[in-house]
Image 1 (cartoon, rainbow, N blue to C red):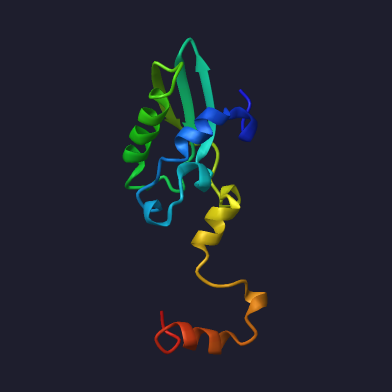
Image 2: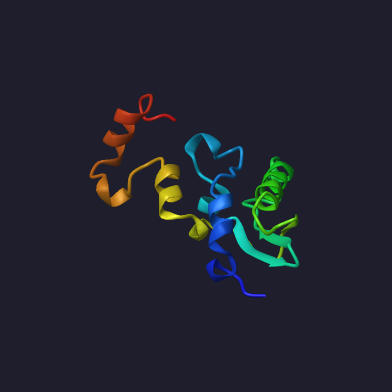
Length: 129
């Protein structure tokens, strides 16, 4: 089976752009933006979705799997859906979309900060987190 963006139909990207890991919902970062979606294949109206997790210890994994299954199964031409976690491939931050990367960045690019200590003092409680 093919992997990566070519393995994900556009309808699935649209449907899953509204599914959020609970940890990222408030920032508006979907499972698609996180790069968790590995592949979607439909055969005889049955969809098979492969997802990566950011961590094998994710406490919200079952919720994300259920939300993905429901979103895909609700699409035209899909009657049922199985969602599988891919354990043989590690998720990395390289999979984040540019939008997600910007939303998750807490500090500016180090090259943009001339005086690190002054920046931290101005943006934290005396330089402490």
